[in-house]
Length: 116
Image (cartoon, rainbow, N blue to C red; front, side):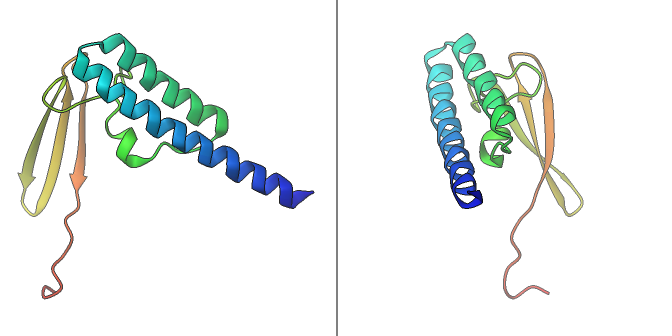
C-alpha cells in the first residue's frame, strides 16, 4: 500500500509542476497582450496549486510573480529590471510597475575554473 501512495504523490507533484509551468506561460502571453487581470488570475492559481499540493514553486517561476499583487512579471512590459553592484556582490533589482513592489536578490556568478 505505501508504494502506491508514494507513486500517487509523485504523480500529483509532477502534474502540479507541469500545470504551474503552463499557467506561467499563459500568464506571460496575457501580459504581452495587455490583459493584466488575466495574468493576475494565473499568478494566483499558481500559488493556490502550490499550497494545495504542498509543492514549492520553482525558482524560475517564483521570481517572476509579484508577491504583492500576484501578477506575472514580464521585464520591459510591466517590470523594470536593474543590476546593482556593491563591491564584489551583484544584485538584481526587479520593480513591478503594476503595484510598485521591489524585489532584490543576489546574483551568483559561476567561478572560472582558473580562479582560486
